Image (cartoon, rainbow, N blue to C red; front, side, top):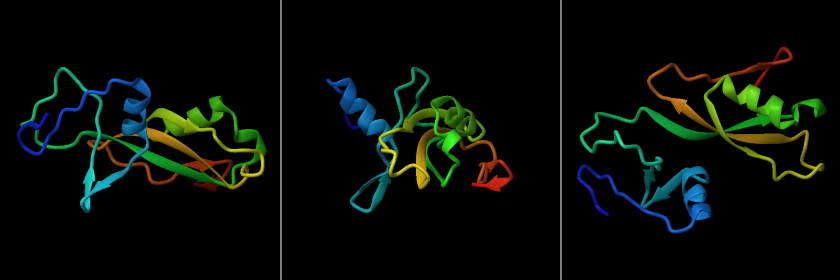
Length: 121
C-alpha cells in the first residue's frame, strides 16, 4: 500500500519472506536505498527522520574461541541490538570473517570500532 511521504506498507504472507526483506539488505531499487522497518503501532508518515536501522557488521579474523553465539552476541551488543548472526560459515571460512545484523540507534553516536583482545575491529 502506498502511503504518503514516500512510505509504503507491505504485508507478507510468509514469515521467512518477511525476515529476508528485513535482514538481507541493504536494498537498492532504481538507484535509491530502500529502508525496511518492522511495523510499529507508533509509526507516523509525518515523522521527521530515521531513528534506527538494521546494518551488517563484519568482524575479520577472530581467534577460534570467539566463534560462539554467546560471545558474538556480546560483541555485537556493544554496537546495538543483535538481530541475527551469520552462522552459515563452514570451518574453512572461520578465521576470515563473521557477520552480525545489528539494529543501531541513529540518534546516538555510531560505534565505528570495537576492541577485542586489544585488536581493533
